[in-house]
Image 1 (cartoon, helix red, strand yellow):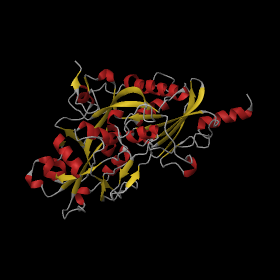
Image 2 (tube, one colour):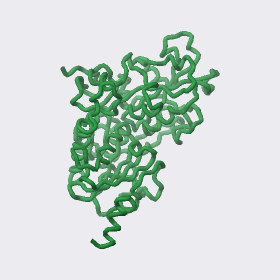
Image 3 (cartoon, one colour):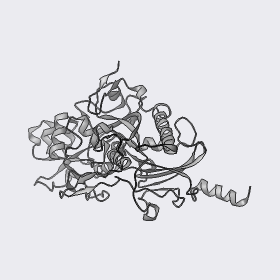
Image 4 (cartoon, helix red, strand yellow):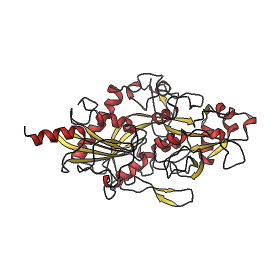
Length: 430
């Protein structure tokens, strides 16, 4: 072997160089709640049933988080059926993903009442031309690492179907996406914000009910007594922290709690300098109107900011405030590293067992969609991804095999209950 070839192979293994720009490129977007599962399939270098790429060929670049599986941008390279291929990921939410695969721009209303297009519909991607260093990075991509313009996605992960989507299926149009099927259950939970020195009102918030959820979705805040039933706790407020219209988690909140169509407005707040910036340590509260955070990770970061129980409520004269939010389970666990802040739903705790037996209803079916008239290697690689993700859930990680766990997904083989639609409550299979 020539020395130049040996050097090239060594550099490729270190992630310093990448392959030629003539390689196949597949653009993947969608669910932030499910991205860690997809990451496992794309990062699988063993060539097993849970792998997308051929054995021993995977390199990656991730940007946007210290934990690679939580990054907003991921660029994977390897061989798929011996063909050099990039899978270029930009995770902006399920609804934004469906819109991006359809070539549609979702409009959101900010807290000033101004309609603005959501990021990610369509998406701007990292360059898949060999110029991006294949290493992990905690910050967002540098401008030179991004393509010069946005364009549609080939594939989109979604926590709900197009049946309740802001971008519904219309035959013979760009919205007529190909549904590869459902890969498994995607899980969600209600959580309260972190407080290392809580007041009694915060400690008393342990459960939310469907009517209480519908109330806070509509108003954006409620008294603590609304959740605890204690008249003495009527002088402090609980605020809602959540996602923007691009989110499948938000779509599940609306659908699972019978709040209305997914187009219905939700009033929300942010913690730590507003949704336009990365949350900082300052425990500030801002009204966001029908807007919200772009990812579950950003919600978790905001909910992790300590001290609201010692901070004056900026919207009243009271001396403290609390917050609750809705998240994917993996993001919710990052708030404290445990389930200590999880809230029960109608008295039922979130765990794999309560979902599998039909007791807990805040979950969705995870779909993989392909763009209109998808074909060729994009369709082939989409099917490969679908098969690998399903295997990751059921066979590799066996999500759902431990009833007491709080897995981000659950394999269908463990489910003893099912939902017949996005808006249905679970019913027993047997």
